[in-house]
Length: 342
Length: 262
Image (cartoon, rainbow over all chains, first blue to last red; front, side, top):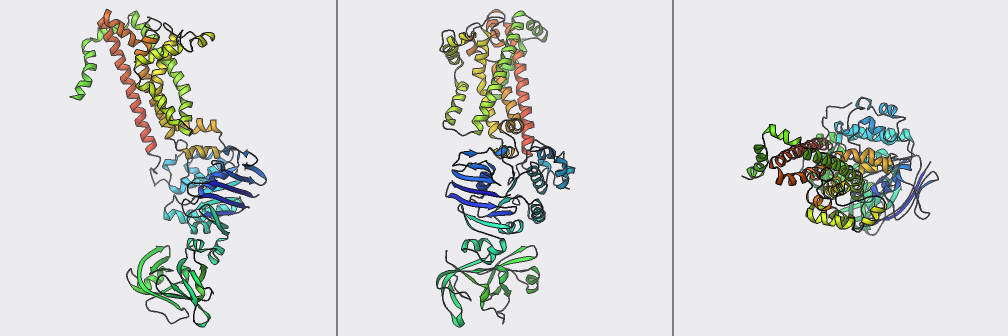
């Protein structure tokens, strides 16, 4: 089974124009807010009719504007989980799950560990519980496609990590064509097999998450995956390296070749932090005060001048790093990739 | 001072009528007939208003179409129209010699001076907007995402309306219906111009007060007292419904107790 879609639809500031084919896998559309992500889901579900478009599931056409086909939402086999879940406030958990199909209600309540809440109303549930109700409700219809709109954004940070793991396992076990949209690259990478980067209505690149990190198509994709992006002018450097005079005021060396305006891409986990310039193989050093320290689980993102480094919480403690301390951020010439300046 | 100004006339009605004579006055033929006519015509008008007004309000609230603002304004027009003007308008439109009078007669419907249909029409015209306006607001307050969710869960437009929109708007609709009913009970101007004041046929309680005012002031006072009580009861029920509704809806955005978890 595969979901095929083609959409061309003018939105306020730009036009949505994309073509996708999703097999029995999870595709995440990531992009900044307002990139048209939710509109894509609404078109698939039949809640938004695009100016031009085609939506078909395994040869069953739901929408074909040219042929005048537009199957109404209730007759498309779609399971849509809304951003704020859109649970019916006047119905119990059982009533919500059974709204689309009564056949499997007990099985689904059991599977999502909400049997004990069957008679509760949505207002009494926690964020994580609401999400499980929304998923159970969407699956009760036996959908051919699962659509998730920002599935984790309504959750607090603690619940989020746990739900992310559960949701990944669920998506794997369902093996349904799944389209999820999120503005968070980490969520996308954790939940999906393929990630499409959607900007201003266009998909810039579709690839497995690891590939997006390894070879981003352009500077936007790179920055979206969490990379440092440093603009500068490339010229020939010593020992066959390329020297890039950065706008930020220092020079970076890289093994990649280029001349003229470029963006240097450095991933935070390829940047090490030390009190003094280390005598190691790294040739790029930036000495600057620490602007911020942000803890993410057992890792800490350290902002040093124009560069963000990601190091373990343990290292931060060992080095006794504090905001304002002057430190050296280092990365190797092999860790600095070049992209044409955007 | 303001409070006294508003309360004094109401209190005065009860001060002038001893409880004993109140019951005597209310058991007269004139009052009995007026009560029957009032209840019957208002019940029929309310059914008409709710049956036709509810779908109209739902469509206005959920569809965007050109001229929506104009339609809303036209629906509000009877709210500000002087009742006498409403009566003349109804006469000119539906009366025996009115624009549609001939058409209605073809269908065997006689609307005009001295018919109960005219009373119902006058009440529906004047009191209808009191239902439709809050009904539009009640449907607009229903999160459109919920209606979309119902559609993706396999519910057609009809099932979406009955299972999601209607229950969620029910509080606002009942409040609107109560207000509309209260306005209908007091209808006077349009009814007397359009339907006349014929005891047992078109004479409602309000019209009876006007008639008894000349003949038997105590009787007029007694009917007034009755209407005060009915109106107060309706107002109270609106307040109760509104109060119940606000506690019900204000719960929704918040998780009431984080302690309930699996």
